[in-house]
Image 1 (cartoon, rainbow, N blue to C red):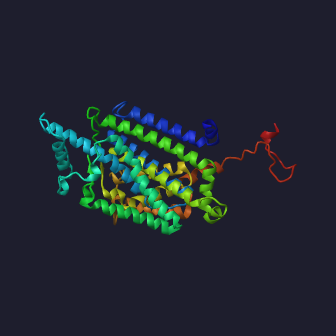
Image 2: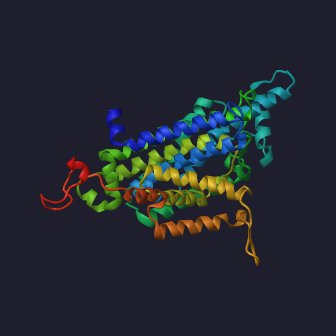
Image 3: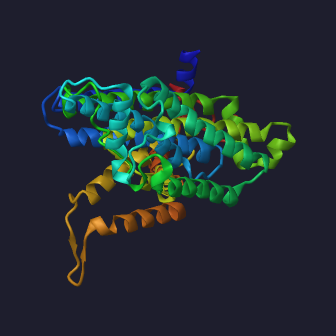
Length: 408
């Protein structure tokens, strides 16, 4: 079954092979396992880029194939990061408290109070919120990475799709959901440290001996594995009958409903599935970023996500990956001070300030003149090759001229 799927979709095998080669090359060039030609910070940037490519796949599934322009998928991305970040911060603080106790035994209550004071003293409280009750359990928090965003997507999707909200109104609703969540998390009494967010996430408990150089490569491996599995699952979803129904709903929802298909069920499944993919991407992203705060969930982040997919070429999984990787790396170059300022004589363009303007203009230009995005360049080069008709007539009549190669 797998061989049949891969034979019908050779692009999947090409993508997975390219991803594996990329991961191996970066590993061999890293400080931890290779020639020390790529810095640890660059390895982290590449690992985070792979996570952004994974959420871009989720966005392409729900928008490019299903026709739902969601402006709230970064909320699920951020929630995944918050869930794993709670364990990272709790476990790291517990280690610090135990070390500072100078070997003196602490009761469970004293330990809990000390951890709560360390984490929440910045917001003026020393009590551990109820949502942190199981923060000391890694399996439980990993389960919440899927359960919390998945439940939010399921409830929101069920309410929206059963009411048959579509088009721009649905996009506004998803954006409102994201804004409401961000505003709630900004409050100090939200239980997640308000505007301060969760920090120090790059310090993995129990792995202090490994060092950031090794951890960055390990997270690169995990991100590449997640991206590969996510791409494979997404390609399998869109390649069969289910994928055909998805495209039909995108192109003519009323006709699909008239044919008897449960349109709302299809939408709800894809919306929830992509929320889970986004949450997994976020859970891998923020330990590499080291910090998460409510600003990461702001609606503008989800708008950027749509821009990435549009620039790469929506309706093509590898196009979404291409767009996310391209914009992420170019953004790092422009905003990291690597791009030289452009002196126009009367004005000096500082790319740190003008990068977002350039990104917005790129989105407008792609929308107007290149709707297939960067992936359309592949079509352009592919169209330059001569057609391979394998001896088929070149005209409508049986006596039409055939290719010379087929005559031999």
